Length: 121
Image: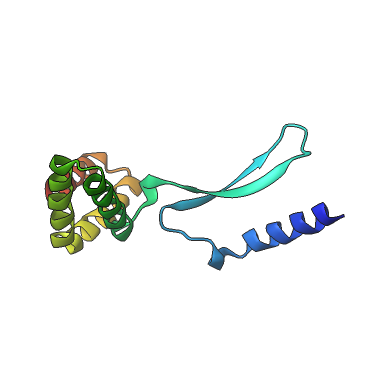
């Protein structure tokens, strides 16, 4: 009895899209072959990260490197964070262009834009 109530409550919660984070996260549903078990969960998808998420992850990595006294890695991460913050607007613009090129299947231009993004990071 409680299982059914709980299951309905969780399913209703996942139907509320405004509660589900979109940047870097996606909703997935697992169903067993016999259909007896079904659950929905959130998972991190790095390919969907935006610029803010990338900075957050880099800063977390920097903190870990300092805590573990990996100072060479910390220096590289610090420099990468500065570069990303400095070129933030340009990177956002290039990422939008890259997505448009991919949608229109202009892969030659997408390669050029991808290389520009790598240079700015």
